[in-house]
Length: 107
Image 1: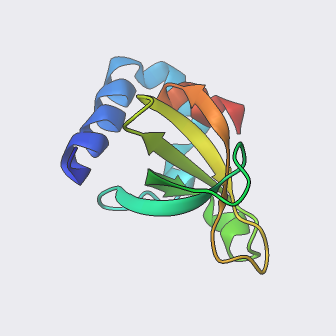
Image 2: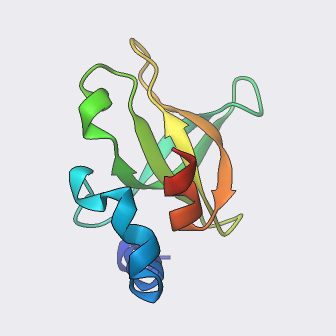
């Protein structure tokens, strides 16, 4: 996939259900212009990294080193959450929650 294709997945889901997306206050989050492939620690497998698309970050807590990040797995076809851990280089994958909006609601 390309960054444009991943962004299109998010944009299409929001367009299909704008009323569901509205209460999530997506504007208060920093959404990258285009998603970027990023390496995360895999919480399910010790000492293993996983490469996922970074979709957006919780800017309010990211400055403290512990903000959430919405991610997308091409392999799983699912969106999920990663969390920053202070003093660690990579955020840690928490889990997959389904669609983009389901993942946002899980935050």
